[in-house]
Image (cartoon, rainbow, N blue to C red; front, side, top):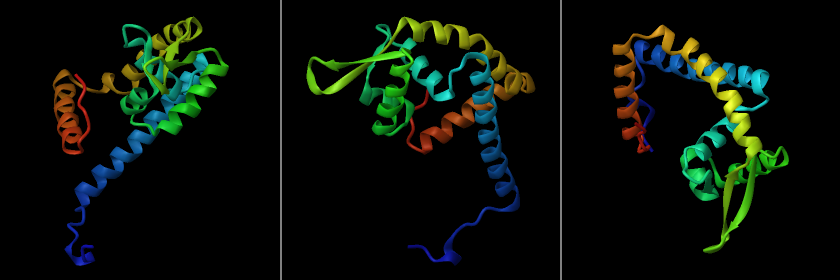
Length: 158
């Protein structure tokens, strides 16, 4: 373990930027979650699951692949999908090739829910983020976030 004196502590600018980032991240997610709940009754995690499902051609994905895509623990996915099943947003069925695996599939109710939620969500994201940025700033942030995700070993998205 490194000695405390060997740690390259954050300077004032780095610390201020880090705290701004952490606060912004928490505030944005909380605001988007509150607004989505009020508008559609969906939570951000519900919306994330439904987005992944609607991005697949068949409207379904293996539970393990959903966990990887969302960067969630498999148990979190299982518990969340169970709650979504009770609301008929998704269904779960066994994987014919693997007795231990399962698929999550979007239902018609889930598809209708995301179609209702998406316009308000996009407007909120635009209002809270993109309306405050120029096209150049969006491009710069895209490049910066891609570099940070790559350094952290995370997959980048286009």
